[in-house]
Length: 172
Image 1 (cartoon, rainbow, N blue to C red):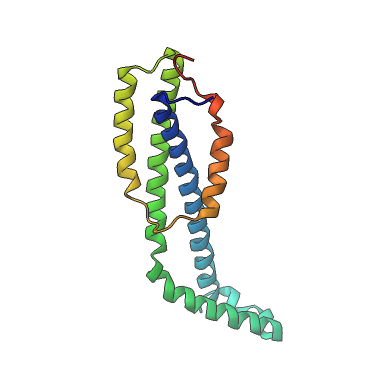
Image 2: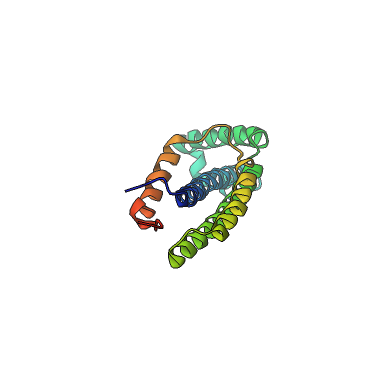
């Protein structure tokens, strides 16, 4: 059972860091996929593309699909600079790397606490340094609002990865 021991701050931060690592990884993957497919559509419909010369496009169905792809490509080419997809990808990469390092530091601290069977002043000092790193990362999010569905899925995964009974509580 969970009590009010201060070591829970470490474990809560570990789970939060892992949540953010998973969340920003998922968001990065989503943005990379959007970028990939938008680049593919623009490349396929470019006038220098060999795909544009396929005989299929001369059929009625092919012509309709080609017109749709051309319109889609024009829309993508117009909005892509406005949504700054590559900048968001770069920011998500930075956040993911930062949260991976933060998570690693917190896992190390968790191991130290478990192995020493105590939560000492030295552990508390390490934890304060880790919190400073976390503060810097939290300010870098490129999102105004989080994707609740993705966040919930990540929360469930973290709870399974780090159930409450997986943590050592000194004095219990």
